[in-house]
Length: 277
Length: 320
Image (cartoon, rainbow over all chains, first blue to last red; front, side):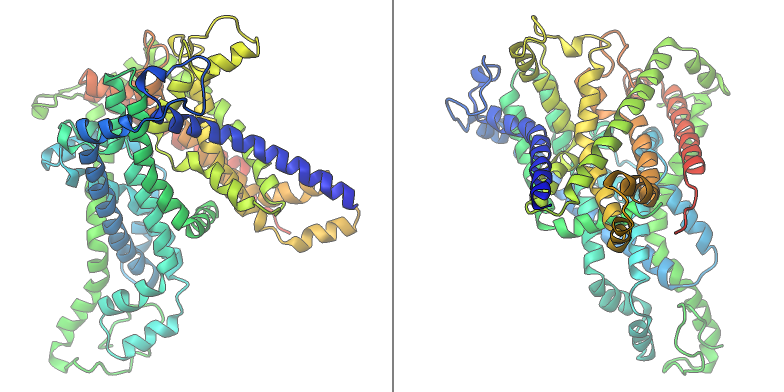
């Protein structure tokens, strides 16, 4: 019995390690190429460990190719979209979870419908709406669309979360004469930190990585976010893989950081979304 | 009734509100009724302007030869774009490519995801490390991984070609992305590689929700591992599997960024298009907004029908 268990464990680790290699090798390669001089990009045979290490790709990408600016744009967009989504989605969720009003069921159903619509299908009319509102070529245009696109899922998740807050707590506050806003701001939100963390992670990753909308909405160079900047850079400099990957790694760092820091909430959030069927 | 029941199960209604004087009871009542809408307003405004309105607007556009500079001059063509598209060879090929992408990548992700989830569910030390690593492609932007795969599958000196040549599986480097059929291979592999981590984590959550006691009871009854899997795990995992099938299929039919970047949106000769890369080209390269909108509406209709059918057919309630 003991022996059988050991065999199982060995097989499990072997398979998991094989999978890990398949996942990791492309990333390791990306790091390696970003540290190689340009002429070694397609060296034969390909080496994972660079024979000669240089930071030139990073300094070039960040200084001459303006990736510093694009990084700042991405930070502004992702942080604002995340903060706004947390605020707006939790206000919606509070109303849906804890208040009675006319049209509640219908409004909630319409909001949930948003989860079933493929986001790219909305791009053409969003482009025309944003054009009317003079939101093309502006970071605000990106932020507002990212918030709107996040609302369905995040409101749904938070509504479920707010329903678990003990009613007694809220009642006690109402009896003390607290306004609905005070109850929301001082009691509901602080009690929902882990639910809000899920919203923060989802929205941050989404707005940091988003490409299709930014690709059509931003034509002016100085307003680019990292995903479009990287894609367009590669399109124009087909051979400069070192710089492409240096920029990619810089773009990837915040994502990995957020993921590692919030991993616990992240897994919980995914489990919750998985249960929604 | 001076204080309307704004909140579910609020404190007893007879409790007097400190400020509520008799004469502004009417005003206060109105104010109370409006409170929920004040909370809803910002969200519904954003959702209405950037999601609901575009959805309806899009249908209207699809019925016109939309003139983006002077919309009032747009010519009404009815369902003309739809008929035109359905009879168009490039669209048919794009639709076929998209369908094939879904048929290949969805079962592959489900199968591999289930395997990984079962391995991770053994609760051996180091599980967290593998879980984190497998999730890395999921959180990486599509742009980055698409370019990464384009590099690895480079037609002359890419890593994949090198490994295949070393293994003597091919003599000449394969020009993956220059061939209409071969180009699908890196794109499919990328879809599987990027998505499998998410699938596995969702399945793992589903597996861990199954009560341990059930397995112990089954083991006591002498059910072997395969029978336990077949008769307990799979049926209990069914809601998760249906959920994943629907979400992955929707995602696959919306394949876009990898196609756009890896084949420069449809090269060679518009034979490697997906529905959405074609939509992009018609709209933003050819400025055929009406046609583009019709393509996206067709896709949405297909996505809706497929999801409903999948849910209807597969979602039978199982009770234990």
